[in-house]
Image (cartoon, rainbow, N blue to C red; front, side):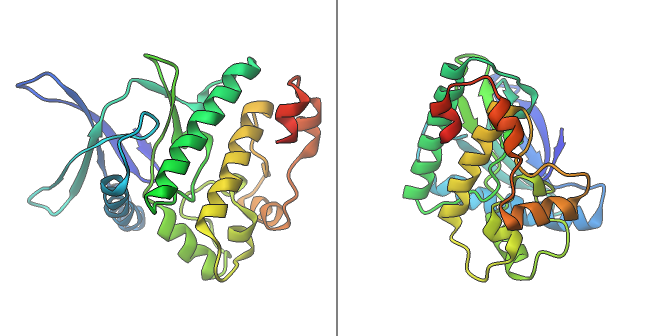
Length: 231
């Protein structure tokens, strides 16, 4: 289906029967096409640099057709995006956060940052309930957007999960620390079922993020251990 980094399709190898995920740029809008084509190229570079890890998708192939449309091929995972789940078991929440943290840590060790951690970019595998991080293609675009002055909607389309330094337009944000904030934003969602900077408009969400004014009420009311909420 369509997403911020492109459109994803299921492909099946006719000879082996093996399933793959194939991501294409968005072809329905010229501006989105430009953004998502660049994102695909960056994601390919990131996947090639990433180590083999259970919490990261494996790279399979890169194809460009006669119309110069690129296709990024990765392993297929039958899974559910985290933003479609409502989990009440604190042990499971803690396990997912540990798995995502380990995957991002391995990515950082390989010199790869994500800069767009949010529930839609984490899948929970049906086979073993393990969290898998996807969509590594927007890091450079997010940093450029921040440096240019964040007066427009961010390229990831999700200002409610922005790290404050990106929302403020810091000239030299640390991408590693942006991901650390992203882990906290993921945990906030898992505990409250809402984004930390949820607002009626994108500009309001960016302003909340820039000020670091997350909604504390839902977190205080969440029926989860205080040790998790303090994180």
